[in-house]
Length: 48
Image (cartoon, rainbow, N blue to C red; front, side):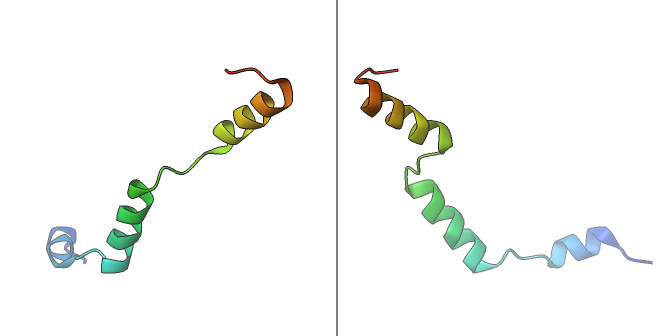
């Protein structure tokens, strides 16, 4: 039987995953709503 507690003690996250997380959090990426609102502002000349 697998000892999950022992396996969790051995677990170390991949350095690449942590690097990608840092990059994602460091950049202010627009989501779909931001893009749509920007398009609407450009089209209508209004701010939402």
